[in-house]
Length: 178
Image (tube, rainbow, N blue to C red):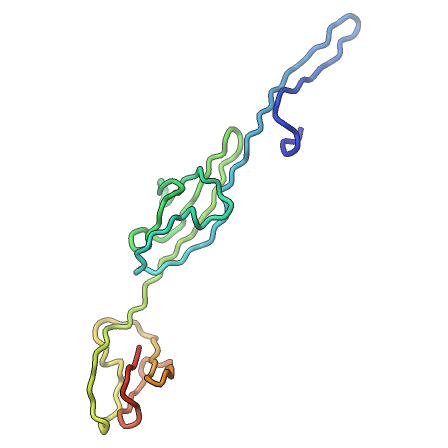
C-alpha cells in the first residue's frame, strides 16, 4: 500500500479455503491523514525604534494556517499573531502546525534580531568667524551620540572620520551632517 498513490477505503485480505473449508477474510479500513506544513520563513531583522506591527504568518511561505506561534516556552499567539519590535523580544519564534491522526507536527523557526538604532546626537547652529582656528564639529554635537559616524559636507563630500577638523578659512557655510 502506497499512501501517495493508493486511495483510502476498505481493503480485504482473503485466504482461500480448501478441503471443504470456507474462505477466511480480514478487513482493514485505511484512513489517509493529510500531512501538514509549517512552511519556510526568513530570519527577520528589526530596528528597536520601529513601532510597526508585523503578522508573523505573512513572512512564511507554504504554511498551513492552522498553526500557533510559540516563544520563550509559551504560546505567543495563533496564525494571526503580530510582532512589534518596540514591544516584543528578540529570539527564536516557532510556528507549529499540529499533524492530524498519525501525521507528525511540523515546525518552522524564525529567528528575530532587534538592533539598536544609530544615535547621531543633537545638532545645533553655530556661528564662527572665518579667521578662527580649525575645530572639531563633533564637539558641537550635544547629547549622546554613537562613535564611528561620517560627516557629509555642504559640497556632498563624505568624510569617514568623526574627528573631522573644520577650517573656517577654507570651508563654506552650510549644513555639516553627522
